[in-house]
Length: 353
Image 1 (tube, rainbow, N blue to C red):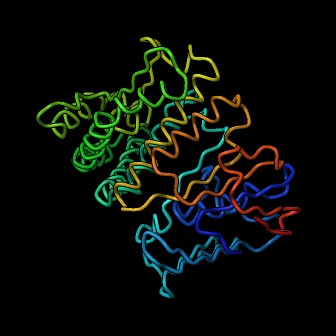
Image 2 (image 1 turned 180 degrees about the vertical axis):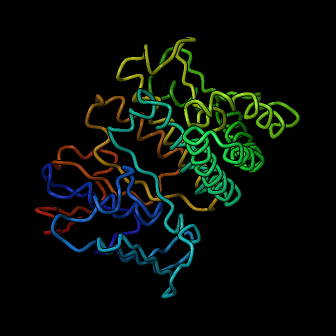
């Protein structure tokens, strides 16, 4: 399947495979499902796995292929014909941002959704963040395992094993906290401006909430002290209660939590604004606009708000765009010039301009 440089409008009834196509494209960026699903659950039913092969033209030309086998749950990635030893080396081969109605969960959902937004965006735009995230997660997993072991056995040696993982948690956790704080400080003003441009009249704020002071001279020392202070509680529950894995991105409307007191339209507006900031962050880091994957994102918006969202996307720098909608009439006027194709039962039937 060839995607024109300007993009494509994919039209088809619900359940025919439109989102699958977008998910396959996004897989080339994250090397996993945009929904966070397991690879075994991404593969078509009653098959041995899945295979994706693509030629990526920008920002750098690459051929990338990804294969997953249910047997053994093995995944292999090749880039330009060579097997990639570490998946992280192929991460972000295709810079992409996906917009969909479910994005409202970025605002209305649990803090874990916003932490995932942070981690995906910053890992794809910064190799240093990605490495710190990988090392932090590895240390966190091992400390939690040591905590459970100590709680079960009560042995002094098991308790000492908990301490071993605190220095790497503090070191790499501080890197994550500083990067998240810097991003929020950089974009907070633009976030408010974009919400207003889409139609929000209240005062919207974006804040990074962490359980240590991100402005401190030594975030590492604060994390070290906090981990030590919480160690008795952590031993009791078998979990680490301090660190960036417990932080949140707070969105406030007139000083109140948007996730609790905002309307569905206000929450959707904020989610769109966050996605445009994600696209801009990737563009600035990679030197090219990401692919915009639009999964019927205007379905619950009135025509005026949808037009303002599209205007905002153009201002950000709308790159190659793949729009999936149920009907031709659902294509916004601003995107009617896109070439079109139809999808039925997982197959592309035709294309036209």
